[in-house]
Structures are given as structure tokens and as C-alpha cells.
Image 1 (cartoon, rainbow, N blue to C red):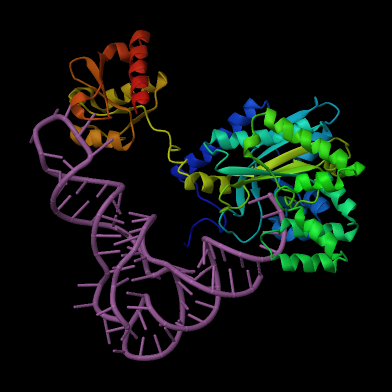
Image 2 (image 1 turned 90 degrees about the vertical axis):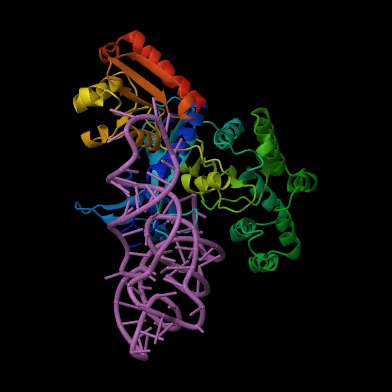
Length: 452
RNA sequence: GUGGCUGUAGCUCAACUGGUUAGAGCACCGGUCUGUGGCACCGGGGGUUGGGGGUUCAAGUCCCCUCAGUCACCCCA
């Protein structure tokens, strides 16, 4: 549509904003339960913050430009470099382990597709300063608990976990080394999405024997862990990595999330900086892109900020997650806030006038109620029937009006008019903010909100 | 960046093999209903059929370009 948002960018109308808020509420709530604290950084960063880590080829996928001070800058495509910088700058002063999270809006100049836009919000959760696999388990538990918070069960979303150290040890044991390692990673990453014949061709092209290639391909199969245990269990490197990974799985079970976790050594993660346990979250039907991905990146802080601290984290975008929630019917309750009370012109409208209505509105708001009304004298004086309609369409719990005999009446708007709950009080008591009257009205509204 | 598919009102869709001023439902706005409700009835605003060009007496319909969406690739968050 002409005149709409830029391609890959979204307008958030109230309904969509409510969906976004629903997701962000869940993010913050779970992060809070896990005792992570929120931080943020600039949405615009020096270009080289990203080129240093990822190489110049990433520039083609960045929103970048030269600012008026001749600085090369870019809209942040990810949060990790900013996070690494912030942590590194105060590394000595921060209490370890650091548990921080952020909800940045990220940008990437790429062709938009379903679940993949040029802009999205992403929950970033990171832990710094703890090398134990307990931290890895804690991290994945956060991600899985976010799913639960949003109503997604282990039948909806699966976590796939792998370990680069284990994979590296096994590859070495198989006899894969040097450039062939990268090829093996690439092939494993594409298992299921690329014909096996192509995979074998690539492995062979990297100088690997047919037996080695077959062994690599078996790593992507279910039960690969047991296979590794029996074939390479005696290898010291493999044995050590297996112990860590087994402990990790045991921690996940103890944290109560094992039912959502599958071991899948073909999870490689595109980002090169991962060094240990990595994971991704997918919808169980496999219809969408990854919901979440992360893992351990023990060398990144050293490479970026010169501080040698172990670290791990994940990113979870709002786009794919939102698609999944909509597909599963879990987004229907996420609606814009509605007013509690809607002031209409009742029998007392003629005598109270607009001034009286506004005074009532003002008092109710001072008392903390969310209050809406017609915004015009004409509407205030029009037929009660159509005013009730307006109040209902606004989603108000109750309509409230002057009776004209010194009293104010509030009437519930749910159900039939005949058995609508009614609240009545003295107008002057309400307008003078009398505590007993206000409490009674609050209780009335509270009852209505629970009934709906 | 490459290729396939799609594009009619805010939304869901109509419009026979090209043929009068492109329609409907929902939504929105106004009115009637002389006073307690999601109703009903009446009326209204809204589309240069994504945009541009071409073929034709005539294009929403056919052709080309372009833009956007979508899917696959690429790449990844």
C-alpha cells in the first residue's frame, strides 16, 4: 500500500500494540522471576562495533550511514556487542554472575519474509562470569518458562540443545580437522533442509572419507548421544565434554524443563562466536522459523572488550513468537485496555450540564478510575439509548450518570439491562471524594471486572 | 540480491468467456426510535481496482515495467 510503513516495518495499531505488550509483559515477568535486571543501550552505534566482530560482509545487511559528524554509524542489528561493551567497561565493579536482560528494537536491512522483518523486538537474556553448565541450564529454563508464561507447552515448542565442545571433540575423534570442521558444521546445520547426497558431496570435497562423512551425518540422528558414548566414550576430550553435557541435561531436569528439551547435535547456530552449549527453540510443528536461539560465548568479551569473562545468552524475537501465539489462539485475550467507567447523560443531564459531567469525570479519575465519555455536549444530551451503546462500544464495565435527584448511578454493561448490577450513591459524597463512597464504587467495579 | 505466486473499500470477498456511473457484508459516521442498553430501520463517507505504460471501440479482467506482500534460495536475529 502506498503511504504505508516502510517495507519490513510495522504500524502498531492498538490491537497489535496489545499483542506486543502481551509478549513484553511475559518477557519482563519471567525475567523478574529469574532475578534478571533490565538494561538498555543506544539504538544507534558506531558501525565498527559490528564489523569488528562479524566482518565487512555484514555491512550489506545493516542500516548504516554517515552522520553529520562524519561518523559511520548503524542501527543496532543485535544487542550482544553493546552488552559486551557495557559489561567490559565496568567488569571489575559488577557483581558476578551478572544477570541482565534487555528488550531492544533491532534493525536489519534484508528482504522481509514471514517471521522476518527489517525491525523487531528481541528479548536478550545474558549471564556473565559463570563457566558452570548450571548457568547454561538456568538460561534455557528462562526461555522455556517464557513459553509457559505465554501458554505454550512442551507440545507446542521444543528446545533443541547441542554443545560445540562436544561436537568439536567428536569431530576430532572422527578425524575431521582444519577447514573440514567448518564444512562439517555447515552440513550438520542443513541436515533435513538439504539432500543428503549434496551433504556427502560437500564433505567429500573437504577431503573427508566416506566413513568419516557417514559418521558426521549420524551425529544429526536421534540417539547420537548414545552412539557417541559407545563409540568415542574412551576418548578423553569426548568423555569430558560428555560429562559436562550430561550434567547440563540433569540440571534441566531438576529445573523442571526437561520435558521441552531434545538433544540435537545438528543445532549449530549461525553466529561464529558460540563456544559451548547452544540451543534453539522451535514450534513443535516445524512451521515457523526459530523462536529463540542462544548459547555460550566464552571468548566474545575478551575479543570485543578485552575482559576475559565467560558468558552466555539468548535472543528471542517478537515476530515469530507472535505468529505462533496467534496460530495457537493464545493471543485473543491480549486486547487494548478498556475504561472502567463511561459517563453518560442520565435523567440529570439537563440540570448538571456538561460542567457537571466533566466534574464527575475529573473526580472519578482523581480516585483512580479509567474514565471515558462522549467528548461533546451534544452527545451528553442525546438519547440515553445511544449513549449506552457508546459506552458499550468503548468497552466500559459500567455507565455512570446523574439521576437528577442528588444521586449518581452506575450500571453494569454486561448482560441484559433488566438484571444489570447497579450501584447508587449520593452525588455530593462522590464529588467530594468521600472515602467510604469511593471504596464502595471501587468494589462495584471490581466485581464487574471479575464477572467479565 | 535471485526465482515462483499474489495484489479490488479499514477487514472478508463479488463483478459470465474484456462490455454501462466497480458491488455486498462487517466496521465507521449521521439520523429515526422522546429517555435503561449489543436491536431495528433510514441515510452517509470512503476504492484514480497498488502505481505507470501498452493492446483494444472498450481493461478490475490481456501484455510489459514498477512497487508491495508472500513462498523458496541466500543469509541470519
